[in-house]
Image 1 (tube, helix red, strand yellow):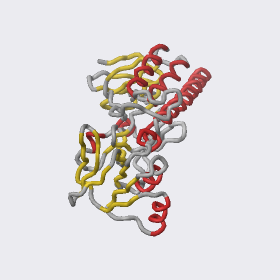
Image 2 (tube, one colour; image 1 turned 180 degrees about the vertical axis):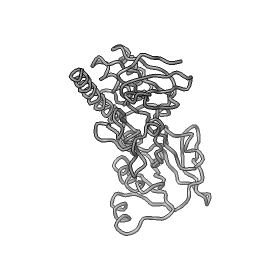
Image 3 (tube, helix red, strand yellow; image 1 turned 90 degrees about the vertical axis):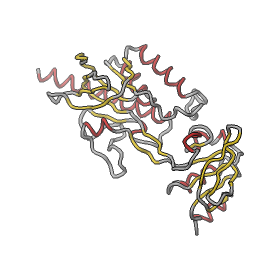
Length: 307
């Protein structure tokens, strides 16, 4: 099925970035459609934090509230998955093909599809992800204040992560295959971080709560919370389809407004900045929307003058 009506903007992804962009564009009287696959990054988290006036709100409640606000200004939200994105035949707009065969057309495209967090291959981590297993101290440090925290050294950022977490608890342990040395070790010592050398075998759960990390030698490091640094895999299929340039870090190259290397294609939120919290993703979406509207106005002026 082809929906022939041309929209001003198609937004791929209905998370904080996508909905914020849709809100700004709909209030600017733009014809906007959001296509959302229903796979929010923080789906397993009970609450989100650090979002002024929304601190502690369940992520699903934020999205449902956002959808209501966006629809209130006339924007359309479609539940579906974009299978392919392409420029239209004339090269003046874009066509999205959804998983049910629907084809949508627009003048501009904003991609806010986010990332997938790939956790270390330790049994039990995935099952507790978003609960006692977390990655962001600023998002969840307060909730585990003064508790026993273990940081799994899974990336070069793990030492920085454990240093930050020492601000929330005096009982922080870095579990690593090789203990830091020299200045790095001294810095951890100053912050009171305990270092344990070993390999994590599994997460120990008792009474539906994490109680420790079992090591390969059978010993257990007791803890109430586990922090890891996941690998970030961007959901950037539409951006690749459209021929956008990517940076050395593997993420799409976009400026501070979300502008990519392809005219008319924008990217915002975690698909560009995987470390951005919810409030940062929402801000990025709003910024992109404002610039997109300005660009559309300039194109309309140019078209009128040419005519």
